[in-house]
Length: 498
Ligand code: SF4
Ligand code: SF4
Image (cartoon, rainbow, N blue to C red):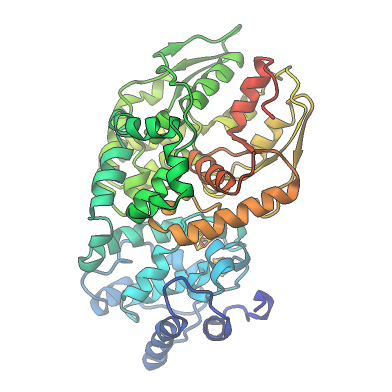
């Protein structure tokens, strides 16, 4: 079904899509999906209201909605105007990875906004089916980039999912052993994660994980743990921790703090070193606060807001925002979370969070604004660049990395088809929704191979792991790295990596 056949501003059209599109559904049957929409439409008709949401139509006040809606209304804390920004034009659907894969309107941005609004209005119960459509959203925010009406989708889905998570039966989703022990207990604590990974690293060095994978023995592991094991990057030499201070080379142009995070500090410490060296080359004093903690994105995106807020407040204390020109982040997911500290929570500590958020810059954004000192080492290779969702869509940093890479001598950067479509990593989505994540990483690698590039550059740890695993499993010997790794090699006049 072509999106051009969808009439603007018409929910009937949305229902038609849900009804006649062959749904390549994961585990929500099309009949159920249609029923969900039918229930929305039925309720609307009964109330005699125009089901087509539009700013020109009078809407009931929030007090009316609160009176009619169930007590624990997951949309109660959301500014209702944000729902009304969506005029149902459908221009976002072609950018939505889940819609592209499933062809189901309820798994599109427009459909999800309508589901959330209907639940908020009390016209639709937050059934397991409704929750499933919302859970399947990657929160990649590609719909925000595509939307001509400026819909702030992240400000709808994130608080809505957090509110749903706090309710009865949904709570089980993040109150299980995997979330408690692995995602919240291990991932957010680099020291614990490093210790826990030590046996896996030994097994990797001995080739046992590859062997177990090829013999299908990993199937005995629980699904999410199996995903985790296959995601491990190849073992590299253990890098020592960054010192608390690294001085600028030459004239000092800026004083910055480096955010090292949790998982990234265990898996990508080499990239942290590269980032610090490139900053030094560009005249920056670099400080590394050793009492900094996880940004809180893992908790927040799993719907656990309170622990995320505690981590945020710890970081506000660890980084004295007033003492630096910028707080530099090289992981798009963390950067996006840190930049959002200011609007996630509204309490007396909000000004401190806003001050920190205001200083956060992605490394490519910062160097582009500062004016890159051109590196001189030639890198005669063909590379392509994948826009990490939390950099391109959430932070709207798209051209800066490309401008930096254009300054690397002899590097040929080729366009990646569907660069704006998520690779399936999406924070911990690849662990919690492995089937959809696998479809998307397969699609991503197909597009990469189409370019003929042998190097893939992207500014997010999750994307690096996801694309690298897909390439490994399909036997494609690609060099997959952060753009800053390549800049660092060029500054150091090292040999091209491929
Ligand atoms: S989210 Fe934006 S692009 Fe998508 S249907 Fe609504 S208004 Fe149109
Ligand atoms: S955030 Fe991504 S997956 Fe979710 S509705 Fe928007 S485009 Fe689709």
